[in-house]
Length: 192
Image (tube, rainbow, N blue to C red; front, side):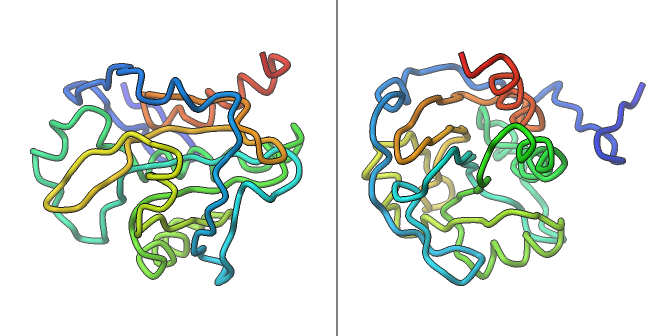
């Protein structure tokens, strides 16, 4: 049976290894978000640590390019597969986030802004994507990473940042297309 989300067939996550919680994000919750200015698809750099209100940041390793054949080795990395479904989960729920008091949603990867701009346009994302291509955020926040074909990628996670403070962290995130639902559940349950 195929289920649908947002009018598209839901991904089948069977056979994709689920990431384990290795404790790599335990240090984040309750800390100040590091002051790092990141290039964004808006054309203006964004420093999440300076933003007022409640902001949601989801981080993903990388999205595939149109027509790119994703090798089986990528699927074998726990938590690697599913970046576009994660981004779409936040796109499809963006109005609900706003209704629940979220001021902004941001996605972030180590891909460059030109690559991210193509993705934003192609899948119609209503929020900005941030580029940590130089790994400034990954280093400052000590985010978990993995290597892929000579590039350092940040492992998938999400966090709620309120007026510069990290108030909640979701790590690991699986399945990726449920990332937004996990954050929404936290918001609806009174942020506990």
